[in-house]
Amino acid sequence: MKLNRTRKIAGYTVIILSSLIMVMPFLTTVFNSLKSYAQYTKVPPQWIPDPVQWNNYAEVWKLGPFGQYTTNSVIVTVLSVVGALFSCSMVAYAFARLKFPLKNTLFLVVLGTMMIPPVVLIIPQFVIFKSLHMLDTLTPLWIIEWLAQPFGIFLMRQAFLAIPKDYEESAKLDGCNPIQIYWRIFLPMCKPTFATLAVFTFMTKWNEILSPAIFLTSKENFTLPIGILSMAGQWSGNEQYMVAAALMSLIPILLVFLFAEKYFVQGSNSAGIK
Image (cartoon, rainbow, N blue to C red):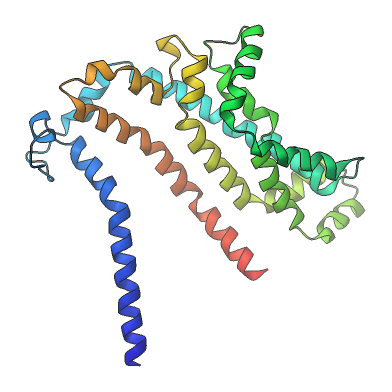
């Protein structure tokens, strides 16, 4: 009993210390966003802001068109998530359940494209979008996700393969065609995987910097990360505003993760039952 108690204390101690290590950078960012410039640059550092500068967040909106930047990010991210869920699930269903020539070979080719660094594809994509007259628009930032990315295909295919064939056979007996089986049977049963893909896509597109920096030139088309970086000169003497702006950009990601958390839990529980 005493040994078990010691192990529990040691385990809780490790968990608490690990949690503090992970939380401290975030808390430091929050504190820095609430400081004045004098407090922000003070040596030795003043960890707790006194007084708290709540108006830093209001001042951020006065330094640039952050409403437009946020709107652009929302448009790009929402369209990207919808496109990823639709295209990846359709292609994954074909690889998981349909029969056609060279299916396994084509799937291996899809997996092979995951090894290509995204940076290598930037120049070909730039040439293609330039020939289509899509540069300096939001279209190149979201339309790629409608072409079924390999990671999403792999993720959804594994989820579809885990569904017993009995459901599919029962649906066929009831007269359902493959599209109806995909829409009415497979999609409702894969909500946890859908949530996972949605969160990954949302985080990737919301925080994306490279593609917007390559494809966009007009400030009115900038997404939020690029918009914040483009105003680096205006932060001089007010760097705490940049910290506040970066912190505000994290709020949508936190909200999406909290919304999708229950689906992650459902997926873990179902995996444990299997």
